[in-house]
Image 1 (tube, rainbow, N blue to C red):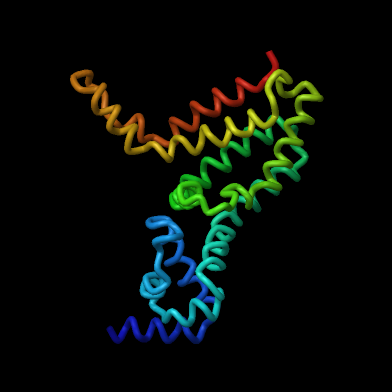
Image 2: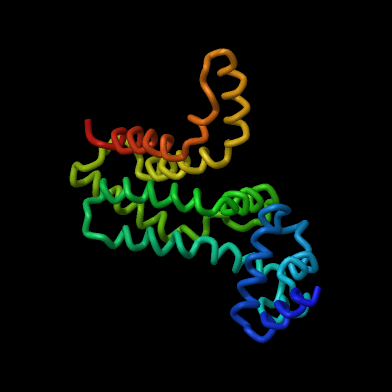
Amino acid sequence: MPSRAKGTTRRQRDPEATRTAILDAAEEIFAEKGFADAAVSEIARGAGITKSLIHHHFGSKEALWREVKRRKFADYEALQAALLASPSDDAEMLSRSLETYFQFLRRNPTYLRLVSWMQLEETGEDPFEPGEELFERGAEAIVRAQQQGEIRSDIHPIHILITMLGLCEHWFQTKELRCACQQATDQGQGAGTEDLEDDNAYFEAIQKIFVQGIRPR
């Protein structure tokens, strides 16, 4: 108990450390319970601070929810923005964007759970709002690549983007179902579940499917 008290005191004296502790705890609890069932008191306990400090730093539970989402997306947004600004051809940029999104989801397992809660709770907010500008710029890059003959022009740019995002998201959303299916079909065949748990193997597969699929025929 004394050590926690000391840690709490240090965070109270360091506003940035306090904000980080609150956001870390809030992200974990929002991802587990969603916005509606996440209690501010539970977030405060997880952060090792008082409820009043949450209100001091964020004003409300809603504002804290928005900041958790913003912070979660910020690193990915910066990486993709840099790719979109790079001088590489647009087809290669899409391939690198696919890898960037896949690795982002791999490093941030709570991100898709937060998005799922936004959809399930029907809060009226757009779960993809933080990435709208990136989405639009990505679509523009696809149009340019189609006009230059780098990407096949018989597929709608939005469909290409949705396919790219979906190939990444589905892998991380269906891990438990994937394992169950593999165990049921591989009994007696000498195969294990490790193939369907290999992120790198799957990424190599979708790179081939996606990149080859969008190239002109």
